[in-house]
Length: 344
Image 1 (spheres, one colour):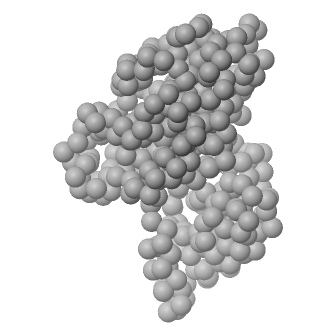
Image 2 (image 1 turned 90 degrees about the vertical axis):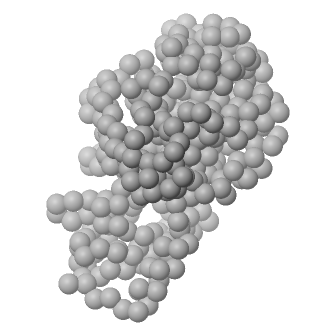
Image 3 (image 1 turned 30 degrees about the vertical axis):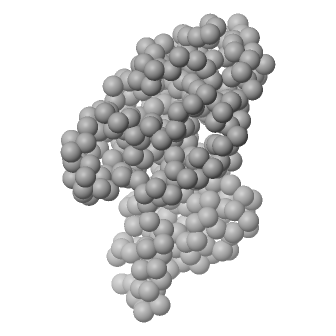
């Protein structure tokens, strides 16, 4: 039986209030591997996303214009659907959260940071979680939960999109050049929209209600499975506004752990997050844990600690480099993984 005290209860209340659900901004980048302006602008967008994973995610749609593009021909129909949705007539072109910002990328890049920072402070209308996400052999499977955070959502025409992307695609991975511009690698390449570009209609949209959508896709046209990622987002079909988005990784590590972002089986609260290394974990459930592991993005355990099952607040000092990690809490029958940012 855990022993609670006033300090712990106060700490939990403060942390719960401080670390509410935050918006992750979605940038949809329309690009082409043959156009020189794309090589001048698109990498800047992807570099910004790489450097700000707690604020923004990206999906790159390769287009049929102005030149042939091997990545476009690997999935033309879903790229064409997104081009048509936004009436994109030229590339490079950047769209932020559907209807928040749309313009050519040369105009977007200089104001990218301010635009994303202004958007990210707007409270999201949805919560997006991965209940499971696994790559077994050639089969990608998962279960994703979309929860309404705004009662006004009930009157909106909302679609959940699940998009498999390849975070980095090397030009050298093609026998023939995918395009003639100066880029040697391409970021956040859209590989598959599940089940298709129409997405899945959300039906449980009242406050705190949710829809669970399953993923089952056999890999196709993937150059490097280590670069597989998934972007899940909610979009208003009429206004095109994106209500929330999240990036997930299906990578399995050497000890068989699947990284599942935002799993909350034990309802842990990590604070501060981002952390400089001094980390507190509060458990607001009577389920006990006996082990804590910290896992890097390569799936390697970089810190491990045995936990006294009677405690409900854990304090550790992590001597880790800046980056994204996953904190796994477990007992002999279950586990839960939360994302942690280290920023010194």
